[in-house]
Length: 264
Figure 1: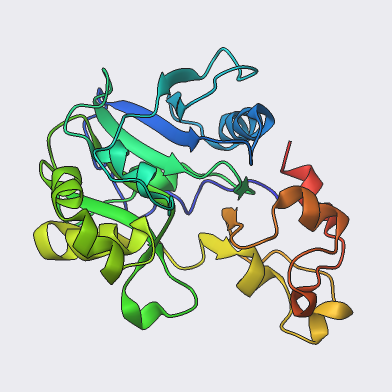
Figure 2: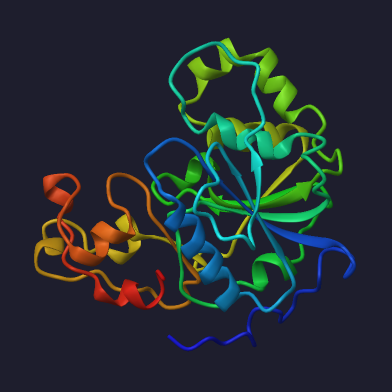
């Protein structure tokens, strides 16, 4: 796919001051993903973002991460012991997150960027406090965002009670929702504003690249037209998708060699 930036800025304007710092923020904890995921993400952003940016990784282990990526410890959360359901991502909404201040685009480290992503910064949100996020593919009527890609104001006290409210009411919230993106979406719709990316920009490898069962056993995954970022959720990650196989038996993946061109 050739990179075409002409349609990324049409009918849009820079949503923030041109002097405001742009950040790419990612997060890595535990042993599931190694430093190579962060480094590949940095490489993909560098190839597909023409605007100035600083990449930041919140992590419990910075060993092996490219020196161009600023690493900070993941902020602590005041929560009782229990299963981690992505709650840590909510710490990106701390009123003061280290010395970061500007507009941030959060990216999961297992995504694959396939085209220019300037539009994720130049997209004109309707409200200053809007968080722009992926709309869930499986049940879009629920209005829940997928937090693999979201843009927000970092370090400007724009969402002063988002994290504190979660910590205060955690025992109730964790019964009501399964993961952090559900809490995030519900809270933003009630107290701020939630907007969604163009549905063609962020595509699900599972639901939009792979053919539906049983056709996935004979048809290789394809990249949808207009896609800028491929999202991986569930059992399959980019390395498994490239080689093929894996996942639930009925979601068998045929080898996807075109991913190698991007995931590097």
